[in-house]
Image 1 (cartoon, rainbow, N blue to C red):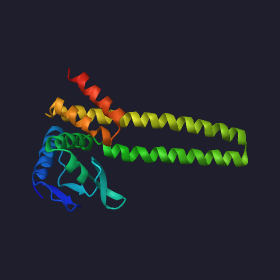
Image 2 (image 1 turned 90 degrees about the vertical axis):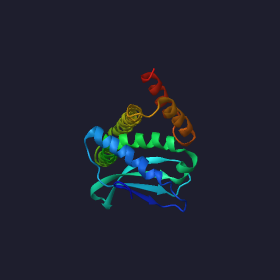
Image 3 (image 1 turned 135 degrees about the horizontal axis):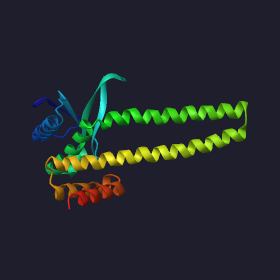
Image 4 (image 1 turned 30 degrees about the vertical axis):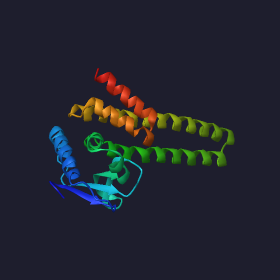
Length: 206
């Protein structure tokens, strides 16, 4: 632990002592920018060879509140990416945390699931007691509305990623290096979205 940052190493490999300082640096930068304190912050080094870094909400009481944002960094990421690339990604994830993106995703996803489930039940009941044709029409409308809602939600998530890129650069990450980090992430993520993110960064920083 260093400066209110706790590292949980779930791997057998050693972790660079500088990692704690890197996380603390960005934690402090975003706390000052948003005038908001996270308190004790936890980072988990996952025993996973696939390179990834993400921030998620967890609860120490299972499904009960309070929930806290944490940072997950895979062993694969620490092996494949250097310290500066790690800084780019951590800055991006802290932007998600301080903008409440993880809380938003946690609230929005169940709403979509509940909507689909309730609508499906209504369609089944109408089919049983009323008209199968009318129920079939409702099913078609359900599928169509689900597709539209999913596309809107997906677009919101994409815009979140782009906003976090912009904020990471605004706090001092080098534009060219950040673009290189995104390029290196393409084999491990969504290449179409990563290209879109790169294009947006180039447009903003002409």
